[in-house]
Image (cartoon, rainbow, N blue to C red):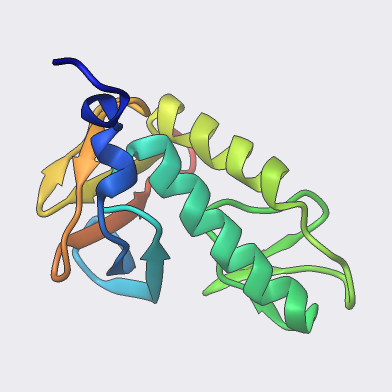
Length: 145
């Protein structure tokens, strides 16, 4: 017999998971690390990027000063060696940042590697578990070429 309980989305039954996220250079140097708590171990690349951006913006906005070590540069920010500097007390809109980050991924200027495997599409489904490796690489165009 087919009941409503049989049709429960398995994603809703997935457990929350915390993963370490690293920003890396193409030479493998880690430039930033954060722990990301995700509501589900199963999510799309888009959801992973948005969760990461939401957390980093929330943490920055709570103090609203200093260096923003986010995935993409906010508008009105100046690039510095290890992040972006905004005017004091300037709040960042996480939704706009998430859009920018997803666009950067689609352009190929941000790469995402999960368990040492490069993901190709924002819609790729991931299954993360404690100990999963998540790395973001920002590719910067070379000067003069």
